[in-house]
Image (tube, rainbow, N blue to C red; front, side, top):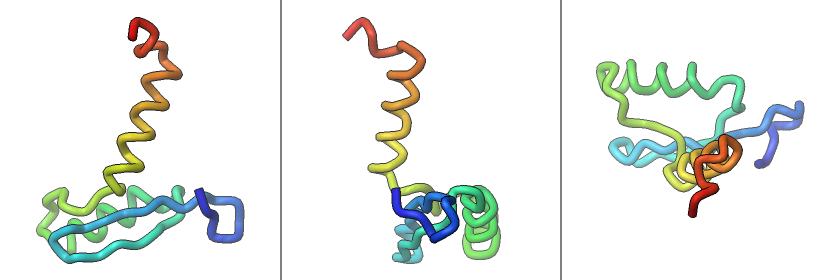
Length: 71
């Protein structure tokens, strides 16, 4: 993942409703998503981590936990 220059990786977030895409530092991810969804969508969870990245992270976690060993 690219970084913002201070070793904090950035994560792509998307909001299909607003038609926006941006990258935020991983350390600010939850705050940025909460702020966007609260101010733009009345708290409804519309914006989120890019689905391709979220799927890949889920696969890595499942693999790390041994959940894919039987496949």
